[in-house]
Amino acid sequence: SAVISQKPSRDICQRGTSLTIQCQVDSQVTMMFWYRQQPGQSLTLIATANQGSEATYESGFVIDKFPISRPNLTFSTLTVSNMSPEDSSIYLCSVLGENQPQHFGDGTRLSIL
Amino acid sequence: GQQVMQIPQYQHVQEGEDFTTYCNSSTTLSNIQWYKQRPGGHPVFLIQLVKSGEVKKQKRLTFQFGEAKKNSSLHITATQTTDVGTYFCAGSSNDYKLSFGAGTTVTVRA
Picture 1 (cartoon, rainbow over the protein chains, first blue to last red):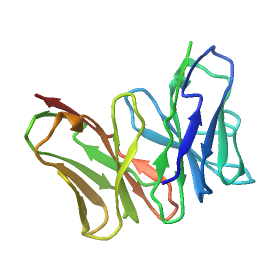
Picture 2: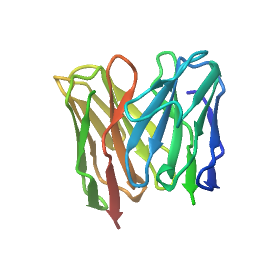
Picture 3: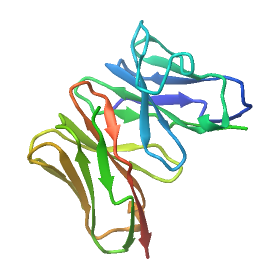
């Protein structure tokens, strides 16, 4: 399976600031996704990162809050904008390759003070 | 959209005993996947089930996909301390997006 590098692995941020999370894959993949896992909760899909076009957001998530880029088939970024304590979560990217199941990066553990 | 329900939320198991976690979907799935997340870790892929009635085994883990492709189960025999973690099922329709169950968090009494 593809090797997924996600960074930063963790960060502590001040409210009102923004943080960009990067996801790099070592091979071309068909699809890339971003998930959020709030403390003690399951994973919720934020959006599908589309190569060269705007991401497809799930209900409850908007581009202004979570802008996503995917300039090529192996790289994507998620920005968490104007952060508040409620944004404290683990953010995970996942990738789907040809005839491969979905695999996750190590995640970014984000705390907002 | 589809919803995936998973029970139980917590499972406290005596080492050596068996347990099962169950998932049910509100809609028919194209496939279902199972992941394990250790404390402080990220979800790690365990298995994917695609066919109606499919059964797959990985050592002490047995995964089943229901005939109607709306439910699934994970059965672990002779639980060990290494089985500690949260097990998630995640269902997918044809759009490849995963809907995760709430997870079953397993603790083991030695």
